[in-house]
Amino acid sequence: MRHLIDNVAIVVEEEPRAEHFDDAGIDDGDELFGLYQGIPRTDRGTSYSLVTPDRIVIFAGPLERACGSRREFEEQIRITVLHELGHHLGFDEAGLDLIGLS
Figure 1: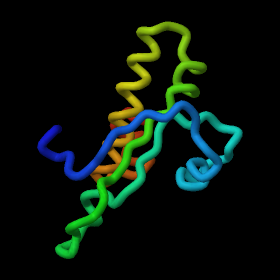
Figure 2 (figure 1 turned 45 degrees about the vertical axis):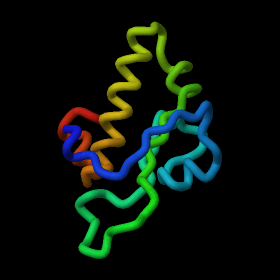
Figure 3 (figure 1 turned 180 degrees about the vertical axis):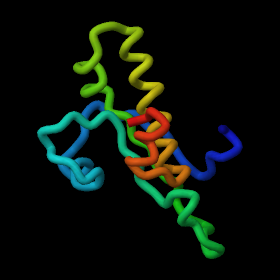
C-alpha cells in the first residue's frame, strides 16, 4: 500500500476543533477520530504539482476516550489511519463501509 501513498502527512492532534467537524461534515457532538484533508489521488489531474502535502489528522483524545484497553486503542488507531488513507486513495464513506473501514 505504501507505493499508493503520495504527498500525504500523518499528524496527531489532541482534540478536534470546530472547523474539523465542518470539514468532516458531521455534528460537533459526535466523536471524530480522524480527518483527511487534501486532494484524493483519483481527483488529481495533470496540473497537480507543487502543492502542500495532504494531511491525515488523528485525534488522540476521542480515541483514548472510546477505547477500554491499550489493545483496543491501538486497533482503533490502525482502523482510523486506514480509513483516512482510503479517502486519500479516493474512497467515499460508502466505499469504506463496503470494505469494513467505517
